[in-house]
Image 1 (cartoon, rainbow, N blue to C red):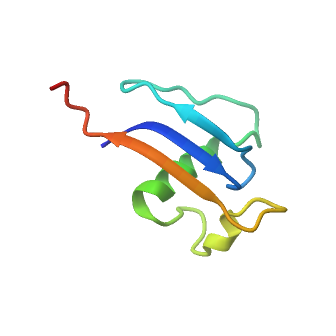
Image 2: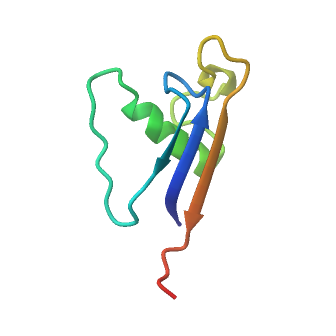
Image 3: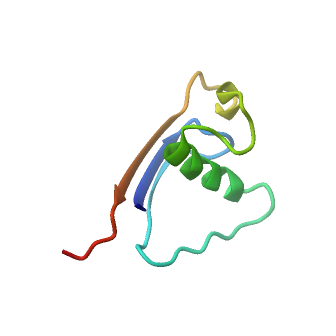
Length: 80
């Protein structure tokens, strides 16, 4: 499965946003503490319904939020 887009709200230190991914290659760059690992964690959470950093989902909620939301669109990658 290939992620085509991700919308997130209230997840870790990431601002609410919608991202669209290229089907073949995506480069994630940024300064320390800018949210690169949190973005990868959000993708992992959507795919596995668990975090690779904590076993307590309430720790994934951004400060001053009561919940987080993740919406993802995926494709099987076929060119039919």
